[in-house]
Length: 163
Image 1 (cartoon, rainbow, N blue to C red):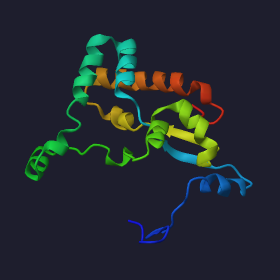
Image 2 (cartoon, helix red, strand yellow):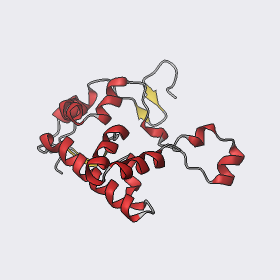
Image 3 (tube, rainbow, N blue to C red):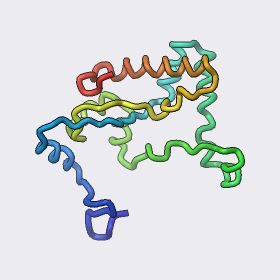
Image 4 (cartoon, rainbow, N blue to C red):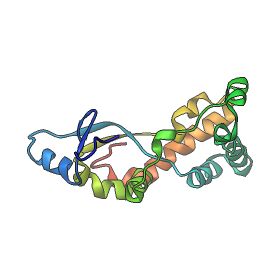
């Protein structure tokens, strides 16, 4: 929460639009975003799973993702008793352009100077736990599909996002 009448937060001054680029311009070394999460589109990922492993595997993966929002509909008791996992709460933003930037590699590449980032190491968000999928065939299909998808979607931007 910002302090009333100031641009200060409890953690220090808040950056205004454009501040990051102005700060970056004063530096004589590159800025690396070493934890650049992107938001994978589930329909796009499912298409890649379908291409890699077939329709049945894509349907299995899609079905496995359908309960990800159950936490929000459950009571505290249900959350505890069923050990429901909460979805990624930190990926939302009130700024549509920022949200789209996190989902679209081309827009991210276009905005990197504005964001004051020279290079970015891209990490999954939805697929971060794909290596923990219990079914070996589904785990391998999703991991392979993710890798192919990243190569396709970030391929044109390897000058800033090495893959």
